Amino acid sequence: MAGRTARRQAEAPRDWRRAMSDHVAYALLVYTGLQIFMTVKALNEGGSGLLPYAALVILVAGIIPACRWFEKRWSDLSDAQAIDPAHAAAFRRDASALWLLAIGLPVALTILIKAAFALF
Image 1 (cartoon, one colour):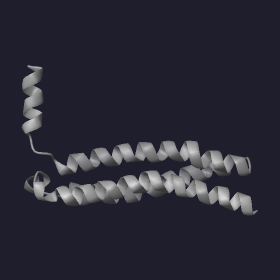
Image 2 (cartoon, helix red, strand yellow):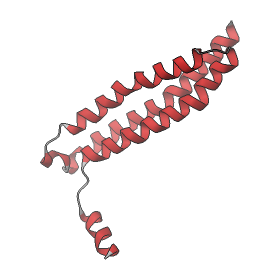
Image 3 (cartoon, rainbow, N blue to C red):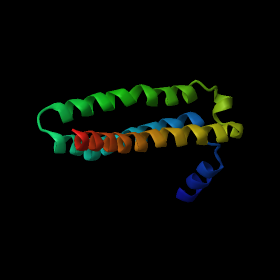
Image 4 (cartoon, helix red, strand yellow):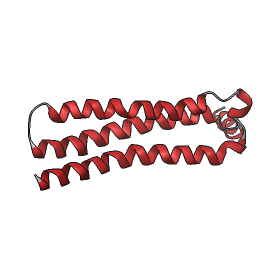
């Protein structure tokens, strides 16, 4: 029975809406984790207090509209469009941009914060 289910899933076309929603959810988790472990650590090295935690809240809240934009772009597809293989290249482009943002932004912010602390 498990083999039949796996075979049926392998034959089913990919739903771009659901796939992008999954990417957004995982990217938010990765982004938040990186913010906690990289950016907040860098902010703590420069000073103490509530600033690192306030910055974390602002940075996490700031990424949500961007992630929502990626998700909305794909959730508006019709049922026929959602399984159309012609959308594969656009999906890969958007997923790559999403992951670049989710991983690159915390790294860039950490570098900027450390550079600012080194200058001042």
